[in-house]
Length: 447
Image (tube, rainbow, N blue to C red; front, side, top):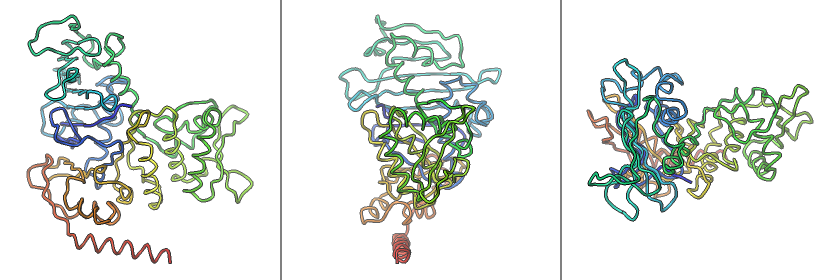
């Protein structure tokens, strides 16, 4: 399954210029891991980063103007970073499969003379077959809807600029539609089609327990939607088509949430589906409307992970909300166990402000997002911080023991940069004292 190795955002609200992972223009960094978590305090830009992925997906599924006005974004000018006149830009660096040549997608969105957003430029590029180093070459290049595209699996722009049979001129009639939305439907452009399908398959979770409590018309549905209000319909599908997989979900639910013995559906006389939770201590079932937010959320995430045909990219914002903190380590392990990087396994991206969630993770999987003195966000991989690496090597967990949180509290952002430069100090003794206190509290709790 395709894997995003790098993502760059420019001029998107507080994200003036941040990069996660590896890009075609920066080959020194390590690629994103199949399971990636961004941790940061409130107000540092985690929701904006989450929404950046959602905005790119919305641009494809609708158009750039509708995407700017949707999901309470407030229009282009409210989205563009303050004091900036340049376009909003996104770079996605990904591989269709391990060993395949990486592909870069560059998208720039600006406003026209009437103030309406449009696609200023779009580029898809890839190294030539057999080329292991050097710059990639475009096989789609559009500026203001006009440009060139190279058909087939191998053709790219030539250095000499000479035309070849695979090269075609392109002129789009709607500058608010992405070029990949149109060209990706044509069989002569298989690389564009695969990228378009990959992007359309992104799943951004806007799950809300109240939506899961709603009563929907009965009927089998294969996939959990982004709000989770069809959770009963998905249970119907799993009960019918994947009973053994569903029983495995129930077993893991029972291990995490005391009292839940079984979960099943009940279709009412008016053909609506109810979700029943059975507790071994009571003969009558509880319904979704009576279950806690945490129970519904854990169940929804496990159901999403066990999708027989999962989305290629799953993005979850602050999964810790409504959950008992002792469940967070277990939830992180569940997500990581499914984000293996293997065929048909999803890539999972999570934002959190809860240190307990990152306790189970390695420094390579965790990124720390902070707000600079200039008001813009800056991000750094935890594994790039030498002291963090050393403390983890000494056996301290990354989150709750205080490594990540002490770094966030103790660092001092370099004044005037706002673009990713950090000056920070973490008191090794303070972290060690915090870790000893955590272990002491755990020992007393067991006693």
